[in-house]
Image (spheres, one colour):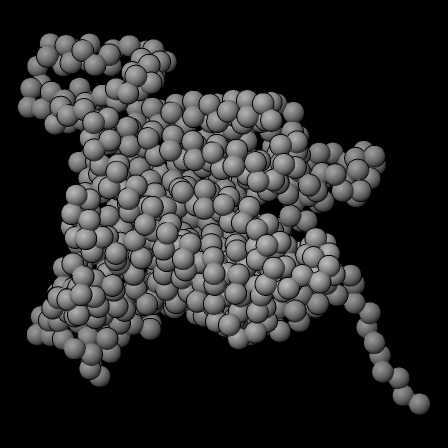
Length: 291
Length: 316
């Protein structure tokens, strides 16, 4: 007689397995995740992937058509466009990911405090958030970028600040709802400190909502960085980003329209992959939206 | 109803007060002395002191704020670098942007609402996947790139439409010809949002008890969907249109820049590039006020459409 040993899984591991299976059943979400990771890895290893340095100019091949030497051709200064697009991913990924993390670092504690303690803090934070939300995102980002001065670092700062109010609202709403849960009441009855309750009960339970929100914020901020750079308020040449490349391409719409195609397609594919991933994640983590 | 209106009005006024104070502080936080900028080449301390006195820059910040708000309430937003009235400049540029925004909303409704309804009714069928997929792509395309691509195709290659510029509405046909591409560019992203919201609102109302009752009464499917389900999902759709106003203004900024339309959005970029702070201050204040006012109107409209809201506040 032989026994098959079945190792029982803990509840957390079982939930993870269920979620993983549910996620893997969504081919588009998986494709989104893979492509998004591809962009992040591509951005990190850009010098290894790009055949040329983004600053390297080949003056013998200005505005060259695509060839085996220059996969996507060259721009007006003889830069290899493929290499430019690969290096351009760096600014976009940095802006999308870092600005989102920055916004979360501000929004989560503020939202937790407002939603958990309520009292006078909550209406004050809520009104302040409303006031910040009254500024259209791009006008806020453009205004901040103008105040701070044009650079990638300041664009990230401006985009991060611009994303904060929306995230505060979400974190606050979650904290407000979770506060009424029985396990939180039980923890209060057990005499747990506020810090313990926030860290062990409320924060972990709001993470799925926050993660979904983060994945949909990243593509918005990727487009935000491209927009700011396109307007000349973000990344400054000779440094490059997809927005900078499109700004330069604008002068050659008649002579070499393909210059405007490649960076734009890169933006669309990158944001689409994050959006697909985010949509799938939302379906998996939040059964309420499953219909 | 009266209490609800007052409560919402009060909240909106508080939000506006905070927003205007933030604008005021933000501009004051800028590096550089405005008196130096106003004085131009003249660096004589006496002249600078006179300028500071004339513009009230020697007063404490709260006093300056109250004076500024007082003037703003009377429609005086100060003078820009070229000594032109900021309020006048903004009022002059605003109709152009409002026309563009109105046309884009129209494009968005025409594209977004029927596809959203169709996707919900044919849920899980190919048409649902296609329209949901197209909407997701629509959300991922930046306005300015779509604008560039449309200029390449329809203006440079096909010569169908002008690549930019704005013609006054007194020449309606030329005006429309110049605004077709910008309105489509600004409207498509919005239509994607609208399509997704319409679809989920329709799905929700199609699962509701009153729709089941309507079916049980033996109403035709057309009547059930059109009269009961769609009418109720319109509540959500109205709100979404109102809430997207901020995104619409953001989109107008970049769309006007691409197509060279001299409207409110272009003015925003110009004011930032010229570092004309009085102008920036006025623009941001007007944008924020517009947003708050529209949201207030949406709240009222929403409460008229859905009486439950009057008691409990808008569910979020």
